[in-house]
Length: 205
Image 1 (spheres, rainbow, N blue to C red):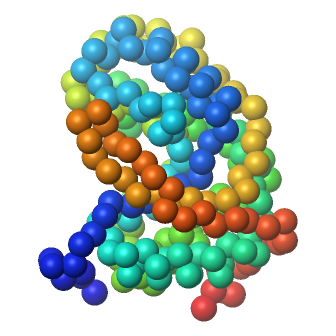
Image 2 (cartoon, rainbow, N blue to C red; image 1 turned 180 degrees about the vertical axis):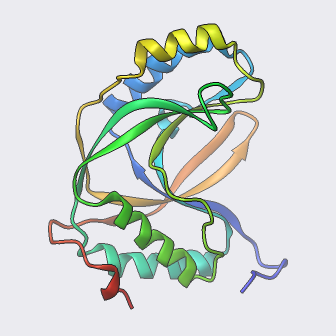
Image 3 (cartoon, one colour; image 1 turned 30 degrees about the vertical axis):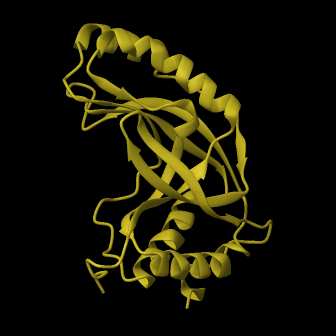
């Protein structure tokens, strides 16, 4: 079902929030790349997160359906322990358009968690995500190819970046508003995770 054009929609996504200390460390590291990329959009520390599922424009009815689905599924989902680890770029380090930090799973199943959010999105009749999930934290998007020499220098200095481990105790549905100052994210709903074993995909309705 495609929402009728007369029905108001808002941009939204499902994500894992990050501890403040990690966000500040990532912002500090990102400063070392700025000399290489003057034409870039740098993610503000308060906006850093791990996207599980970008939803695009959804109606409030779809948001309610996703909320109901995730409240049911995630109430018995095991909390995760993650760590930011390593740095990379899409599509490659030689032609970067997005600078990101990787995510290491120490306990739990992040891919399973993402699959649950994908299931909820499709249950709300959103099209299936075509791209394979790659957990990461975006630091910047380059509008112009950065200067490769200083970019590689910063990369070599930080490629072994390792953050402190942190616990993922909830998933957040964010509303995203695009402004002249950059995107503004507002929590629409949060879904607590439990300490119970994760449900298997076969147990999903």
